[in-house]
Length: 265
Ligand code: 15L
Image (cartoon, rainbow, N blue to C red; front, side, top):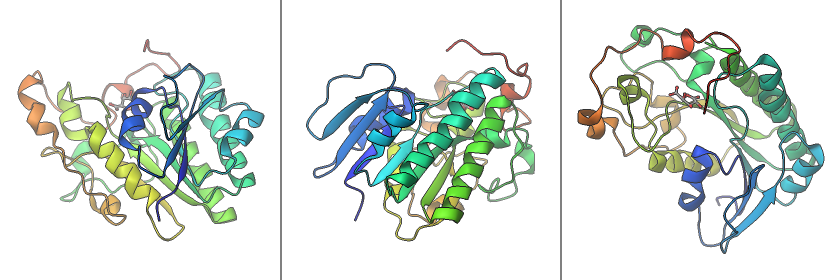
């Protein structure tokens, strides 16, 4: 049975906003947490306003929850201090409070930037394996690699079911050539989360979060093992994308971004 009460951290962010209507189900409660105000709760929703860095907020937010989908944190390159506080330390707080509350299942938003320095060309016929060891391209990527390591630790020590999603480019539609390979459509993102919420055996997994892109470079195999079958393809938007060469590295321009420089959102 899929979880009945699901806590989503970072619910006001891009992915949280995509997921809010798409994960709504009869009999399911979505507990939506963010620092910034959200639209008022609809039936089947609970709103929590607060920070993932605050253990008391997280302890209350994890109460009576069947699964946590942890999206909150820094979503691009930033200073080391902010990556430490809002990605690494905050994920520790989320996992620790989830453990203390007996939450059995956690989905962690990782990123392609945990392995952004890998060559796209070295991907092989099925694409780059989802569990390729970290090759971060930024402090942001290091933060996501640490998130994955924390998830592994909490699975191994406490038996939590932990799935880390190395998300490609999750936007309404792809806007550049790299995203034609890495796009995760909003609908496929919801399909992927549903597959994570429905796994039957507690495990630790690292999966790609991408759609079924014609120009895909990331292996679909690992995510398929939990029943994720994407239906969208970035190619349907290709004519609107300016022609350009595919970058050599998976992380694209992140590989050249000065370390620690916060980009405007
Ligand atoms: C990410 O991890 C970021 O959160 C997002 O803003 C995009 O930059 C994306 O990766 C990407 O690589 O396109």
